[in-house]
Length: 189
Image 1 (cartoon, rainbow, N blue to C red):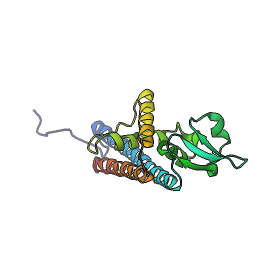
Image 2: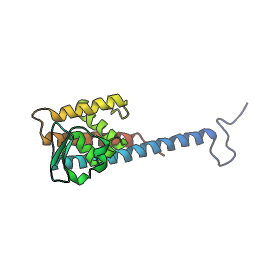
Image 3: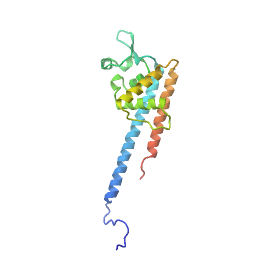
Image 4: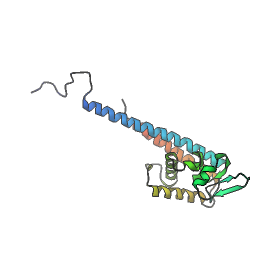
């Protein structure tokens, strides 16, 4: 029969269980920090996208640009050929999705995680409630459907650039709320 309750620690070194708990807490902090950093970048991207829309917005196309001959060209589909030769300064107007892509650096950035997650958040702000969790990693097929949903929303008759800017503001607010939830869930100590 022992007179001591619980584990006896003979050295100042933490127990294996305590070290494991500390490692889990550190991993969770790292994940939360990475998420907060990404949300910060998404917020900045959506802010820039709103400025792009304010400078020039369009429907029924991804974006317009001025070619080397001074002719305004409407792009209705993105191809790698256009992405390689188009500078951001040439773009004169974009749709909602085009503004997000343009704010990230142009068509060559369309498949980046930052753009994809910004589209996820914008779609959520459009078609889901603020209380629902954002689905950050939908399948590629589902994400393509989300892009098409946003394109249809953008191209809806009667839509205005002000409504597009307001949607981007709602998406930013959702991102900030997600950041607050993440901060609130951080382990202490």
